[in-house]
Length: 193
Image (tube, rainbow, N blue to C red):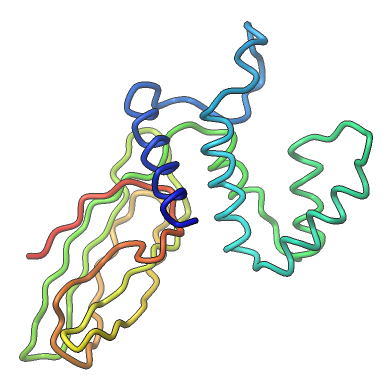
């Protein structure tokens, strides 16, 4: 499953290198042959996967069941689906849908980390650097220790504001990995300082 997610993410990233402004939901299509295509399915699957992670598996499953029952043998819109997820989840998800479905681009991250063993800390810098579009993101990081254990952290990124933070660590750090469990549709450059 994870290998398939990574392959799909790589295909989406490559696609956006050539058509950065592609949007999943588009208001007007001059050519109806453009209604679907591999990118709709690749990015669309990722959008649903990330939505499930955001709202939780039980909420997502209940919302999908309700949506399916409500629109069985009928037409539905993206707004209809969103309203069913919001009804079960309880929060407004309009920003998520706007960012991932109605605007183009995908997040491009740049960052670095510095291990300070004398202070039992690592210093992190992370920011979105993609042109034109911004995303509200929760970026998971894994601090990997020499003994094989790991410490999971989440960094909230909103817009193009960089985040700098210091984390306490409990052992010898050998690496810090972005998205260790493959939950984020993004590309990144991540270096050790």
